[in-house]
Image (cartoon, rainbow, N blue to C red; front, side, top):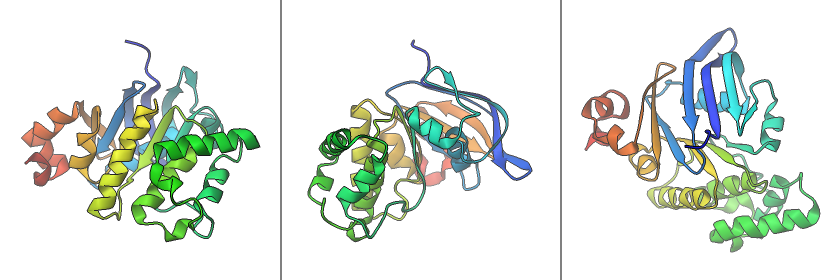
Length: 241
């Protein structure tokens, strides 16, 4: 097996004076979709932010694509090919889809930027039809796709998604999950925190269960869903059905 794209060892991170996640160890292989699940307050979003460098690291190491990155600022991690789409809307609602995409590719040269727009709208054909529409006038699902497309402008190797389906209708949820699979098909590795456990695990290759700031179970999505004790303890009874 090839070396992991992301390797985290003994990572404790949080805010202020106390960590929220403790002794995190995980390896993520290229070309996979890993979903992190667990109850509210388990530390899932904190872990994503720690990988991207948005909170305080108390201990541990993070290696990305063969390079140690835990001392790097978020912008430096972004330039290395690590991208993050946080929870909630993070586009520019009074600007068009095309203008938002251009901002996503601000670090590219003009020709590279236009080529990148062509590439990401091939991944998300629906955005090609909305190029002149203000981002704030898109549906919730379309806005989520736009935000993913904005970070894909720089061709990241690893994409971190925090609750991509939050607040979405069932139709828009299906749209987002379908397009996450399209992103993976383009060679992008994905780590996702998602409240819709069944939908997320259905498209994932790997699963992580967190509780009280620690990883308590890792395995295949099928094993996680079929283990009644895990489902009852961390995913809710509905996930075990």
